[in-house]
Image 1 (tube, one colour):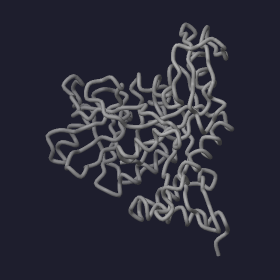
Image 2: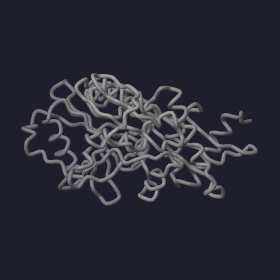
Image 3: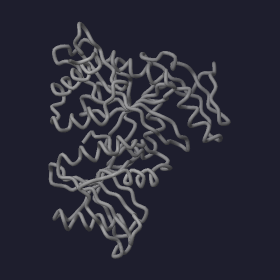
Image 4: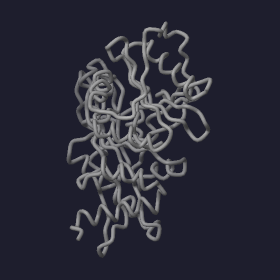
Length: 347
């Protein structure tokens, strides 16, 4: 017999089944390896879960600061209840929780361009596109001689892989950092298809970790790459070309919004404008600006004028140069740099 929390989990999974058409195997991973009762936000009526979303915590490094963000995943509404504002109410609950937790940013990845428009609306959070990617074949011509490096494909994995990944990525300046559970859930999900989890060694020393998949169009795409030496990248590409019988190996690289060929990816909005600006100001004392936030329907406390100066943020009564939405403020800073978002289980 279900208790209430288990019933809500069951009903939330049923929403996924009806809205996203994911495989049962994928949902097994998602609901056992990522989902927790505390991360699920729902709208319920008469014992039924009519809308739900999951809000996962992530570590975020930007502009020399370390902070936290919330990642909204799996927003779903019962198909018979769409158009009633239920999704907006669930999103609002997520945003308010982030404000309560002093988490300055919320991010999500829309499934298509129509959903990008959906999330841009004030009723659904005023999100803006804040990260971009470029899909390119890897060029290893300058990576050097990889003859001393051996590559092994793994069928099993343990925590040593995350320790290596974490050590190489922990201090990257613009990255959404997965936890160990996020990391292993993404690896497991990738292996529902044709996946290659590779490690590279130079002698006994581990020098690289690579997760690649074959996509529906036949391309071999690297989803995550952590290398201690450039030669390891060349060794991975060589191994994948030989064993997968392809001429090129591809990667979706993080890009700036202004880069030629950059394609929109994740969206973001601030959930605590003062704290978001403070993160940037504290690590960049020479940076100054006057900015306003307006149109935040979910968190009106953000609608104010701010002055960034001498490493701190103050409220001001002087008219700012610009007034932006909560999504506009996030995009102003995040889209200006190549922000790495790997292993988000969205592909």
